[in-house]
Length: 284
Image (cartoon, rainbow, N blue to C red):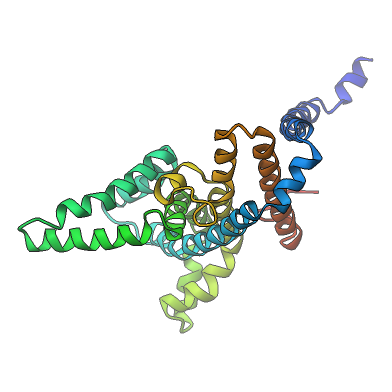
């Protein structure tokens, strides 16, 4: 019996049990939502033109935001990884700051930024007045408009993309770029032909994280863009609107739509990329 106990993979059992317990808790939460609502609530949500419009708006704004996060994230991460300078640690902290700050703070700060434009536009100082007018026009473009949804999603998601992509760049030996440049590549050419392909998994992980953050964002979106049905309503604000009028079943049905869309998207990405969305798929 003692020898049998020694042969048991105790550590593996403990680790697997913890993983199964965590996964089971997530499944339990989703199952509770599904058990609470009726089929009529699900059909109502699926056939509702308001929810359909919110779903489409959520999808395309989150995809646009992901595109912006990829472009800004790749170059920002490369700069932090390859071109450190005195004081660059401050920039590194700023990237992390947007991760730590409550998203509501980001939303309120964006709103205030554009609201001060009206006060500054009347300043006797020409430069201050010009800045105020620019901010006023930008406020008209972003505040309580669909563009504001993308803006709020961007500032709440970009740091996840930068941090993930930078980690991928940090693991690439800079000498590979130097070798490419000795063979005739420019710095930009080495970046495009060598670094980007080697960092593709990290870039993909950054894209998925920024999309996931954007897809389910609520607070900043509601603050900056509002929650006007058929105009600036996304799925997260649909849940809030339904709860605010006491329609808990409908709100949970919308939640299940979001869960299903997220699960299917992540599953398809894992299948397409061979299970390597967030780096190595692990040993088998």
